[in-house]
Image (cartoon, rainbow, N blue to C red):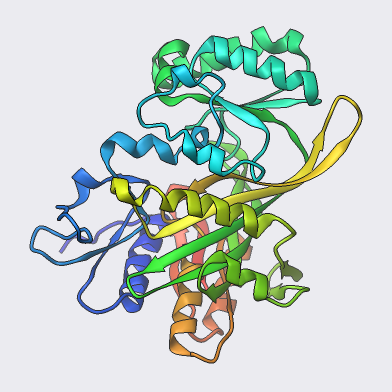
Length: 390
Protein backbone atom coordinates (compact mmCIF):
# COMPACT_ATOMS: atom_id res chain seq x y z
CA UNK A 1 0.00 0.00 0.00
CA UNK A 2 1.36 3.43 -0.93
CA UNK A 3 2.15 5.68 2.04
CA UNK A 4 0.51 9.10 1.94
CA UNK A 5 3.01 11.94 2.17
CA UNK A 6 2.16 14.92 4.36
CA UNK A 7 4.05 18.09 5.16
CA UNK A 8 4.18 19.28 8.75
CA UNK A 9 1.47 21.89 8.10
CA UNK A 10 -0.80 19.32 6.44
CA UNK A 11 -0.28 16.98 9.39
CA UNK A 12 -1.17 19.80 11.79
CA UNK A 13 -4.41 20.46 9.95
CA UNK A 14 -5.34 16.77 10.04
CA UNK A 15 -4.75 16.85 13.77
CA UNK A 16 -6.91 19.94 14.18
CA UNK A 17 -9.85 18.14 12.58
CA UNK A 18 -9.50 15.36 15.17
CA UNK A 19 -9.22 17.93 17.98
CA UNK A 20 -12.32 19.79 16.80
CA UNK A 21 -14.23 16.52 16.63
CA UNK A 22 -13.52 15.99 20.35
CA UNK A 23 -14.98 19.38 21.21
CA UNK A 24 -18.12 19.80 19.07
CA UNK A 25 -21.27 17.92 20.04
CA UNK A 26 -21.91 14.49 18.57
CA UNK A 27 -23.47 14.37 15.13
CA UNK A 28 -21.52 17.21 13.52
CA UNK A 29 -19.05 16.80 10.68
CA UNK A 30 -16.01 19.06 11.10
CA UNK A 31 -14.75 21.11 8.16
CA UNK A 32 -11.48 23.07 8.34
CA UNK A 33 -11.47 26.36 6.39
CA UNK A 34 -7.98 27.43 5.30
CA UNK A 35 -9.38 30.76 4.14
CA UNK A 36 -12.79 32.34 3.87
CA UNK A 37 -14.83 29.89 1.80
CA UNK A 38 -17.74 30.61 -0.52
CA UNK A 39 -20.85 29.04 0.98
CA UNK A 40 -21.92 27.87 -2.46
CA UNK A 41 -18.71 25.83 -2.80
CA UNK A 42 -18.87 24.08 0.54
CA UNK A 43 -22.33 22.85 1.29
CA UNK A 44 -26.00 23.08 0.68
CA UNK A 45 -27.63 25.87 2.62
CA UNK A 46 -31.11 25.43 3.97
CA UNK A 47 -33.03 28.64 4.74
CA UNK A 48 -33.25 29.19 8.46
CA UNK A 49 -30.75 26.46 9.33
CA UNK A 50 -27.03 25.88 9.71
CA UNK A 51 -24.99 24.60 6.76
CA UNK A 52 -25.37 20.88 6.08
CA UNK A 53 -23.51 18.28 4.07
CA UNK A 54 -25.10 16.68 1.01
CA UNK A 55 -26.41 13.80 3.14
CA UNK A 56 -28.02 16.18 5.64
CA UNK A 57 -25.32 15.95 8.33
CA UNK A 58 -24.84 19.32 10.06
CA UNK A 59 -21.43 20.89 9.45
CA UNK A 60 -19.32 22.72 11.99
CA UNK A 61 -17.01 24.87 9.89
CA UNK A 62 -13.87 25.88 11.77
CA UNK A 63 -13.23 29.21 10.08
CA UNK A 64 -15.77 31.12 8.05
CA UNK A 65 -18.02 30.90 5.03
CA UNK A 66 -19.51 33.81 3.11
CA UNK A 67 -21.63 34.10 0.01
CA UNK A 68 -19.25 34.25 -2.94
CA UNK A 69 -20.21 37.86 -3.69
CA UNK A 70 -18.96 38.94 -0.23
CA UNK A 71 -15.65 37.08 -0.01
CA UNK A 72 -13.54 40.25 -0.33
CA UNK A 73 -15.01 41.58 2.93
CA UNK A 74 -12.42 39.52 4.78
CA UNK A 75 -9.59 41.70 3.39
CA UNK A 76 -7.76 44.61 5.03
CA UNK A 77 -9.56 47.24 2.95
CA UNK A 78 -12.87 46.54 4.71
CA UNK A 79 -11.37 48.02 7.91
CA UNK A 80 -11.13 51.61 6.61
CA UNK A 81 -13.68 54.05 5.29
CA UNK A 82 -13.24 54.67 1.55
CA UNK A 83 -11.49 57.81 0.37
CA UNK A 84 -14.15 58.11 -2.34
CA UNK A 85 -17.46 56.35 -1.65
CA UNK A 86 -18.44 56.50 -5.33
CA UNK A 87 -15.67 54.02 -6.16
CA UNK A 88 -16.48 51.22 -3.72
CA UNK A 89 -17.35 47.79 -5.17
CA UNK A 90 -20.66 46.10 -4.43
CA UNK A 91 -19.23 43.82 -1.74
CA UNK A 92 -17.91 46.67 0.43
CA UNK A 93 -19.90 47.38 3.62
CA UNK A 94 -19.82 51.12 4.29
CA UNK A 95 -21.25 50.62 7.77
CA UNK A 96 -18.46 48.36 9.01
CA UNK A 97 -15.57 50.89 9.13
CA UNK A 98 -17.93 53.45 10.61
CA UNK A 99 -18.67 50.98 13.40
CA UNK A 100 -14.90 50.65 13.99
CA UNK A 101 -14.21 54.39 14.28
CA UNK A 102 -11.82 55.09 17.12
CA UNK A 103 -10.45 51.53 17.22
CA UNK A 104 -8.43 51.46 13.98
CA UNK A 105 -5.35 53.21 12.59
CA UNK A 106 -6.27 56.51 10.85
CA UNK A 107 -6.47 55.74 7.15
CA UNK A 108 -8.51 55.06 4.04
CA UNK A 109 -9.38 52.31 1.60
CA UNK A 110 -8.73 53.37 -1.97
CA UNK A 111 -10.16 51.93 -5.18
CA UNK A 112 -8.41 54.01 -7.85
CA UNK A 113 -4.87 55.34 -8.45
CA UNK A 114 -6.11 58.94 -8.00
CA UNK A 115 -7.67 58.10 -4.62
CA UNK A 116 -4.54 56.24 -3.55
CA UNK A 117 -2.33 59.24 -4.29
CA UNK A 118 -4.73 61.79 -2.80
CA UNK A 119 -5.24 59.79 0.40
CA UNK A 120 -1.49 59.42 0.90
CA UNK A 121 -0.94 63.16 0.45
CA UNK A 122 -3.74 64.01 2.88
CA UNK A 123 -2.37 61.71 5.59
CA UNK A 124 1.20 62.96 5.04
CA UNK A 125 -0.03 66.47 5.84
CA UNK A 126 -0.77 65.29 9.41
CA UNK A 127 1.43 62.25 10.09
CA UNK A 128 5.20 61.78 9.86
CA UNK A 129 4.84 58.67 7.72
CA UNK A 130 2.14 56.65 5.98
CA UNK A 131 1.98 53.01 5.01
CA UNK A 132 0.52 51.52 1.83
CA UNK A 133 -0.77 47.95 2.20
CA UNK A 134 -1.80 45.43 -0.43
CA UNK A 135 -4.96 43.70 0.90
CA UNK A 136 -3.69 40.40 -0.50
CA UNK A 137 -0.25 40.73 1.09
CA UNK A 138 0.83 38.88 4.22
CA UNK A 139 3.76 38.87 6.67
CA UNK A 140 4.87 42.35 5.61
CA UNK A 141 4.87 41.58 1.88
CA UNK A 142 3.18 44.22 -0.29
CA UNK A 143 3.77 47.15 2.07
CA UNK A 144 5.48 50.48 1.48
CA UNK A 145 6.28 53.33 3.89
CA UNK A 146 6.37 56.95 2.68
CA UNK A 147 7.67 59.94 4.63
CA UNK A 148 7.85 62.52 1.86
CA UNK A 149 5.10 63.28 -0.64
CA UNK A 150 7.85 63.88 -3.19
CA UNK A 151 8.54 60.12 -3.18
CA UNK A 152 4.91 59.19 -3.76
CA UNK A 153 5.12 58.89 -7.54
CA UNK A 154 8.08 56.49 -7.45
CA UNK A 155 6.42 54.35 -4.73
CA UNK A 156 3.19 54.11 -6.74
CA UNK A 157 5.27 52.97 -9.71
CA UNK A 158 6.71 50.21 -7.49
CA UNK A 159 3.19 49.25 -6.38
CA UNK A 160 2.06 49.03 -10.01
CA UNK A 161 5.09 46.93 -10.94
CA UNK A 162 4.54 44.59 -8.00
CA UNK A 163 0.89 44.08 -8.90
CA UNK A 164 1.69 43.51 -12.57
CA UNK A 165 4.40 40.99 -11.74
CA UNK A 166 2.33 38.98 -9.26
CA UNK A 167 -1.14 39.27 -10.81
CA UNK A 168 -0.56 40.22 -14.45
CA UNK A 169 -3.11 43.04 -14.26
CA UNK A 170 -2.92 46.83 -14.45
CA UNK A 171 -2.98 48.94 -11.29
CA UNK A 172 -6.35 50.52 -12.14
CA UNK A 173 -8.02 47.14 -12.63
CA UNK A 174 -6.50 45.71 -9.44
CA UNK A 175 -7.55 48.66 -7.28
CA UNK A 176 -11.10 48.67 -8.66
CA UNK A 177 -11.51 45.03 -7.65
CA UNK A 178 -9.43 44.64 -4.46
CA UNK A 179 -8.66 48.17 -3.28
CA UNK A 180 -5.56 49.27 -1.34
CA UNK A 181 -5.01 50.54 2.20
CA UNK A 182 -3.36 53.87 3.03
CA UNK A 183 -2.92 54.53 6.74
CA UNK A 184 -0.72 56.34 9.23
CA UNK A 185 2.49 54.53 10.09
CA UNK A 186 2.80 53.44 13.74
CA UNK A 187 5.98 53.64 15.85
CA UNK A 188 6.97 51.16 18.58
CA UNK A 189 4.51 48.56 17.34
CA UNK A 190 3.58 45.50 19.37
CA UNK A 191 1.15 42.94 17.96
CA UNK A 192 -1.56 41.11 19.90
CA UNK A 193 -4.15 38.53 19.02
CA UNK A 194 -7.70 38.16 20.30
CA UNK A 195 -9.84 35.21 19.15
CA UNK A 196 -13.50 34.34 19.55
CA UNK A 197 -14.35 30.70 18.83
CA UNK A 198 -18.03 29.81 18.57
CA UNK A 199 -19.06 26.22 19.06
CA UNK A 200 -22.61 24.98 18.39
CA UNK A 201 -23.21 25.01 22.16
CA UNK A 202 -21.11 27.89 23.47
CA UNK A 203 -18.35 30.41 22.77
CA UNK A 204 -14.81 30.96 24.08
CA UNK A 205 -12.35 33.84 23.84
CA UNK A 206 -8.58 33.91 24.01
CA UNK A 207 -5.73 36.37 24.15
CA UNK A 208 -2.39 35.42 22.66
CA UNK A 209 1.23 36.44 22.22
CA UNK A 210 3.10 35.37 19.12
CA UNK A 211 6.66 34.06 19.02
CA UNK A 212 8.82 34.66 15.96
CA UNK A 213 12.00 32.89 14.94
CA UNK A 214 14.77 33.27 12.39
CA UNK A 215 15.50 30.27 10.18
CA UNK A 216 18.09 29.83 7.42
CA UNK A 217 16.70 28.16 4.30
CA UNK A 218 18.68 27.15 1.22
CA UNK A 219 16.15 28.47 -1.27
CA UNK A 220 14.73 31.52 0.54
CA UNK A 221 17.73 32.47 2.63
CA UNK A 222 17.26 33.83 6.17
CA UNK A 223 13.58 34.44 6.90
CA UNK A 224 11.47 35.43 9.87
CA UNK A 225 9.03 32.63 10.56
CA UNK A 226 6.11 32.04 12.87
CA UNK A 227 7.23 30.19 15.99
CA UNK A 228 3.95 29.62 17.82
CA UNK A 229 1.50 31.34 20.13
CA UNK A 230 0.80 31.17 23.86
CA UNK A 231 -2.85 31.84 24.73
CA UNK A 232 -5.09 32.20 27.74
CA UNK A 233 -8.65 30.99 27.07
CA UNK A 234 -11.87 31.98 28.89
CA UNK A 235 -15.55 31.21 28.45
CA UNK A 236 -17.73 33.78 26.70
CA UNK A 237 -17.14 36.85 24.51
CA UNK A 238 -13.84 38.79 24.55
CA UNK A 239 -15.24 41.04 27.31
CA UNK A 240 -14.64 38.09 29.65
CA UNK A 241 -10.87 38.57 29.15
CA UNK A 242 -11.18 41.72 31.24
CA UNK A 243 -11.79 39.49 34.28
CA UNK A 244 -8.31 37.98 34.15
CA UNK A 245 -5.91 38.97 36.95
CA UNK A 246 -4.75 42.58 36.59
CA UNK A 247 -1.14 41.52 36.06
CA UNK A 248 -2.14 38.84 33.55
CA UNK A 249 -1.15 35.20 33.34
CA UNK A 250 2.51 34.22 33.08
CA UNK A 251 3.67 31.41 30.78
CA UNK A 252 7.18 29.98 30.98
CA UNK A 253 8.70 29.00 27.65
CA UNK A 254 10.69 25.83 28.43
CA UNK A 255 13.09 26.18 25.50
CA UNK A 256 13.76 29.89 25.28
CA UNK A 257 13.77 30.19 29.08
CA UNK A 258 11.72 33.38 29.11
CA UNK A 259 8.46 34.48 30.67
CA UNK A 260 5.52 35.41 28.47
CA UNK A 261 2.98 37.59 30.27
CA UNK A 262 -0.53 37.31 28.85
CA UNK A 263 -2.11 40.62 29.85
CA UNK A 264 -4.04 42.65 27.26
CA UNK A 265 -2.88 46.31 27.21
CA UNK A 266 -5.63 48.94 27.58
CA UNK A 267 -7.85 49.17 24.52
CA UNK A 268 -6.81 45.89 22.90
CA UNK A 269 -9.85 43.83 23.93
CA UNK A 270 -12.21 46.72 23.16
CA UNK A 271 -10.78 47.07 19.64
CA UNK A 272 -11.14 43.35 18.97
CA UNK A 273 -14.67 43.24 20.39
CA UNK A 274 -15.79 46.13 18.18
CA UNK A 275 -14.42 44.26 15.16
CA UNK A 276 -16.26 41.07 16.08
CA UNK A 277 -19.51 42.95 16.74
CA UNK A 278 -19.24 44.46 13.27
CA UNK A 279 -18.82 41.06 11.65
CA UNK A 280 -21.83 39.69 13.50
CA UNK A 281 -23.93 42.26 11.68
CA UNK A 282 -23.19 40.31 8.47
CA UNK A 283 -24.93 37.16 9.67
CA UNK A 284 -28.30 38.03 8.05
CA UNK A 285 -26.40 38.14 4.74
CA UNK A 286 -25.37 34.50 5.14
CA UNK A 287 -22.00 34.88 6.84
CA UNK A 288 -21.07 31.97 9.14
CA UNK A 289 -18.04 32.58 11.35
CA UNK A 290 -16.76 30.26 14.06
CA UNK A 291 -13.18 31.49 14.48
CA UNK A 292 -12.72 35.26 14.50
CA UNK A 293 -9.04 36.01 15.10
CA UNK A 294 -8.45 39.77 15.29
CA UNK A 295 -4.94 41.21 15.11
CA UNK A 296 -4.58 44.32 17.27
CA UNK A 297 -1.51 46.55 17.44
CA UNK A 298 -0.40 49.02 20.07
CA UNK A 299 2.08 51.81 19.45
CA UNK A 300 2.42 55.54 18.90
CA UNK A 301 1.06 57.85 16.21
CA UNK A 302 3.74 60.42 15.30
CA UNK A 303 2.37 63.70 13.92
CA UNK A 304 4.20 66.45 12.06
CA UNK A 305 3.47 68.88 14.88
CA UNK A 306 5.74 66.76 17.09
CA UNK A 307 3.01 65.12 19.16
CA UNK A 308 2.89 61.37 19.76
CA UNK A 309 -0.32 59.57 20.72
CA UNK A 310 -0.76 56.07 22.14
CA UNK A 311 -3.02 53.87 20.05
CA UNK A 312 -4.63 50.43 20.24
CA UNK A 313 -6.05 49.50 16.85
CA UNK A 314 -7.45 46.46 15.11
CA UNK A 315 -5.77 45.97 11.73
CA UNK A 316 -7.30 42.82 10.26
CA UNK A 317 -9.12 39.58 11.02
CA UNK A 318 -8.38 36.02 10.02
CA UNK A 319 -11.04 33.37 10.31
CA UNK A 320 -8.91 30.62 8.82
CA UNK A 321 -7.09 27.89 10.68
CA UNK A 322 -3.95 29.44 12.14
CA UNK A 323 -0.86 28.56 14.09
CA UNK A 324 -2.61 29.43 17.34
CA UNK A 325 -5.59 27.19 16.59
CA UNK A 326 -4.21 24.12 18.35
CA UNK A 327 -3.49 26.10 21.54
CA UNK A 328 -6.93 27.73 21.46
CA UNK A 329 -8.67 24.38 20.94
CA UNK A 330 -6.69 22.66 23.71
CA UNK A 331 -7.65 25.52 26.02
CA UNK A 332 -11.32 25.13 25.11
CA UNK A 333 -11.10 21.38 25.69
CA UNK A 334 -9.64 21.97 29.16
CA UNK A 335 -12.47 24.36 30.09
CA UNK A 336 -15.11 21.93 28.86
CA UNK A 337 -13.59 19.12 30.90
CA UNK A 338 -13.33 21.13 34.14
CA UNK A 339 -16.20 23.48 35.00
CA UNK A 340 -14.23 24.85 37.97
CA UNK A 341 -11.51 26.39 35.77
CA UNK A 342 -11.83 30.16 35.26
CA UNK A 343 -9.28 30.12 32.45
CA UNK A 344 -6.81 27.81 30.78
CA UNK A 345 -3.37 28.44 29.30
CA UNK A 346 -1.94 26.53 26.32
CA UNK A 347 0.83 27.07 23.77
CA UNK A 348 1.46 26.04 20.18
CA UNK A 349 5.01 25.79 18.88
CA UNK A 350 6.64 25.53 15.46
CA UNK A 351 10.35 24.85 15.95
CA UNK A 352 13.35 23.89 13.83
CA UNK A 353 16.42 21.71 14.42
CA UNK A 354 17.70 21.73 18.04
CA UNK A 355 14.80 23.89 19.20
CA UNK A 356 12.36 21.46 17.59
CA UNK A 357 13.90 18.55 19.47
CA UNK A 358 13.67 20.47 22.75
CA UNK A 359 10.00 21.35 22.22
CA UNK A 360 9.19 17.76 21.30
CA UNK A 361 10.86 16.55 24.50
CA UNK A 362 8.90 19.05 26.59
CA UNK A 363 5.58 18.24 24.92
CA UNK A 364 6.10 14.56 25.66
CA UNK A 365 6.19 15.42 29.38
CA UNK A 366 2.92 17.42 29.38
CA UNK A 367 -0.32 15.43 29.73
CA UNK A 368 -2.80 16.16 26.96
CA UNK A 369 -0.25 17.69 24.59
CA UNK A 370 -0.64 17.13 20.85
CA UNK A 371 2.25 16.46 18.51
CA UNK A 372 1.26 16.98 14.89
CA UNK A 373 4.71 16.69 13.36
CA UNK A 374 8.06 15.69 14.82
CA UNK A 375 10.69 14.84 12.23
CA UNK A 376 12.32 15.85 8.97
CA UNK A 377 10.06 17.94 6.70
CA UNK A 378 11.18 18.16 3.07
CA UNK A 379 8.88 21.16 2.61
CA UNK A 380 11.29 23.05 4.88
CA UNK A 381 14.52 22.18 3.03
CA UNK A 382 14.75 18.88 4.86
CA UNK A 383 14.97 20.55 8.28
CA UNK A 384 14.00 18.81 11.48
CA UNK A 385 10.65 20.34 12.41
CA UNK A 386 8.34 20.14 15.42
CA UNK A 387 4.73 21.32 15.25
CA UNK A 388 2.56 20.75 18.29
CA UNK A 389 0.74 22.18 21.28
CA UNK A 390 0.91 21.65 25.04
